[in-house]
Length: 393
Ligand SMILES: *[C@@H]1O[C@H](CO)[C@@H](O)[C@H](O)[C@H]1NC(C)=O
Ligand SMILES: *[C@@H]1O[C@H](CO)[C@@H](O)[C@H](O)[C@H]1NC(C)=O
Image 1 (spheres, rainbow, N blue to C red):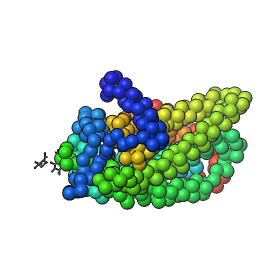
Image 2 (cartoon, helix red, strand yellow):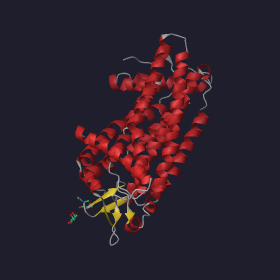
Image 3 (cartoon, rainbow, N blue to C red):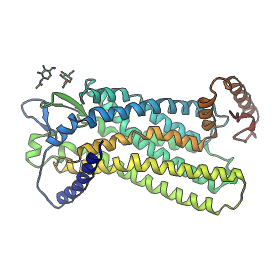
Image 4 (tube, rainbow, N blue to C red):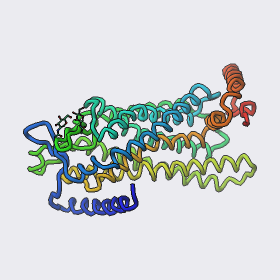
């Protein structure tokens, strides 16, 4: 994206805001998006959408970003799950939340090759309506799942900082129940995405889009009832923007403000204290960065996009909207940094993998195995990081 293009997006963004306000006060229709041709099952789109679908932004830039996300997100999240489940000496709530976060990322990342193919193919979806729904469901499921698990992890981190002396009484059962509730909520709330047609055959461009175009029937458009055709995604994105984005934002910010207060108050010095404080700061900065880059732009644009669609208006910042959704997928690459700052075990595995892969493997397996046996035998074994296990490379 060039600077000029970016400037245009910013201007368009402002324009959408103004259009949104005008619409709310009863402005007239000024465009159309994905109108269903009454004589066939093909769809016509407005010029902005058509140009965006033909542009290098969607056919070159987006797939390159997704390739990056796939190449980084797949191995790092797979390794995280492996470390948290098979390499941890002791399971604790933070690793349960992070395993779920990594699982949500993996479930999204494994479908990315289809999306990459779709964009390189000139935004031509050839895998059918069912696969398109799967892709869309896992895309948004991953986004809101990630936000909710980051929220849980943030609250848990605050709790550990605020009550350092009761750390050994970690409640894994609560973390498991909370995780199951989140998965259940995400599965149930995603239902609307599966209930309406996601693919659209565009007659002008000779392509089939997946999710990129919302179809509005000619009748409903002319009788100003466009809302009837977009109400399922409209309610989904509005409810999720409130419950799975805005509310978690408030909780996360509160947790971090309280955490920073605690870290500021704790006067006990020592280098280990300083180190854990630096890691807590790094975690906070990582999460803030993830939100500013991935979740805030996409959620704002989703609300604007569907608010406009509900009024039968085209989104003139369509390219910007598509780009913010692509940015949202980067969260799968940023989550490993969260694991890195929270989990000592993950940190060690990253270092071992990057620095001296093969030479320590045998010894590490032996050490992990013996400490695992030890922790099973003795219930009072509480140290979460035995000094024997930290191999320096
Ligand atoms: C669309 O693609 C098909 C198959 O490649 C081709 O036969 C047809 O002529 C194309 N239609 C237009 C309008 O380009
Ligand atoms: C999109 O894919 C369909 C089905 O494979 C094909 O008929 C059509 O020609 C493709 N469109 C373009 C523009 O390549």
